[in-house]
Length: 336
Ligand code: XXG
Ligand code: FE2
Image (cartoon, rainbow, N blue to C red; front, side, top):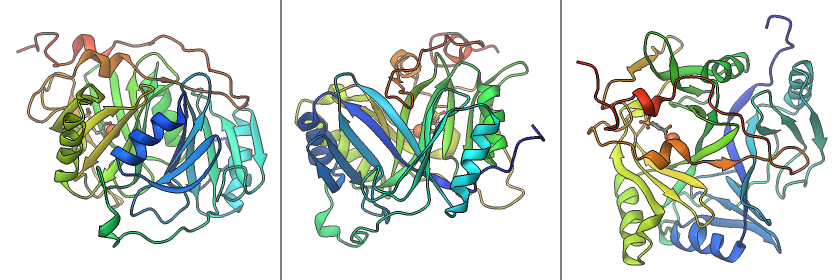
């Protein structure tokens, strides 16, 4: 790894693109019910952001024939980091492409790459700044989502994903493991628990997008809204308290099955000697601090991802022991 050129200076995970099969249905879910703010739109796309977001978008919804996850977007420190991204991924033998400002609305020049894990990643430095809405309490609706916080990705080999993101300068905050296997890991660039997390499973697939809300009542209110509209089947897991990250969370599925998490109350990781928190795979509190079992769909279902040409990436089966077969989720009896 020492022969790799320096990685781009990544600030944070910033946006994701999802292909949805019905833009009107997606708008109803993401805008009307969840309360995302529409920054911009055209006939086939919606550009959405949370109430705290000061860049143009956290989520791009594009209309397409088959539901899939497009790019995972990372903000980099400066324009010089775009060349670093090209050189870094080029040295890894990955396809890259540099696209001009405006390729995505409100976004500066962008470097796109097919990363070694099979995901489409995008790097941008410059963004348009929409109106500041942090204190427009009068506008807030739904889950009152503040911003995108993290990507959770399904990877067949968690240690390989960990090494790749380590080489990009990400810190490790928490793991799920035992003496033999690393089942899951949470890694960060900004000073929170994560910008990216890995779930062991068939991949590359997008497991979920994690969105931060300020208040626990936003998580609960979202569930009440969905219940009132007989949309309770959109609530997949939770509400609950994670062991990992300490977040108060709920997982929802959009009309195309894309998974998102709305959560609050994770913690600061910015000290240089921040210790890694390692959870035993046999600890029933690791994924839900109150010991509620994780439902099987949460481990098995995820969104297909696209390559640079917009084609679905082939999915490779899990290459390690599956957490669901050994973890204390109620499917197996934990060892004494
Ligand atoms: O953001 C997260 C998660 O990756 O969605 C999952 C924090 C914790 C967890 S876990 O299910 O491990 O508690
Ligand atoms: Fe998450």
